[in-house]
Image (cartoon, rainbow, N blue to C red; front, side, top):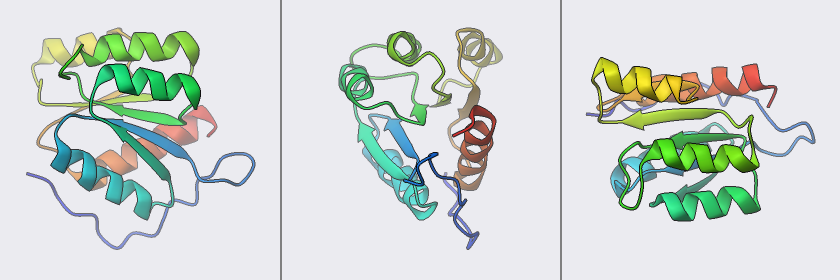
Amino acid sequence: MLVAVTSAPPSGLTRPDGSPLRVLVVDDEVNIAELLAMALRYEGWQVSDRKSGTKAVAMAKEDRPDAVVLDVMLPDFDGMEVMRRMRGHHPDVPVLFLTARDAVEDRVAGLTAGGDDYVTKPFSLEEVVARLRALMRRSGA
């Protein structure tokens, strides 16, 4: 289902003050969240993970992430709503949807709703990390 990261070097991307980029992973599937967090930490990034939309929105309100990896299907409300609420506080935070909802209509809905990228499960860990690097480069992170 998931492909391991090869020995690519860390991204070198940091915040303007030189501190590590902060990525929020929102997924109720513990194994996926942990594996993704490990790969992102390998990049030198600081990772927070939340299992519900409510907790993710509260965390993002307190401490703006540089990017968000967001599942569409969460236990309390869907990822589209999580993104809308986060964007109320931080309108420019890049959001990458990572979800099992793989129909074309779902991908179009996620991007139309304001998502910056959309990757379906099962996924390549390397691809998700590369897409996050690209999102953060474009956002100026």
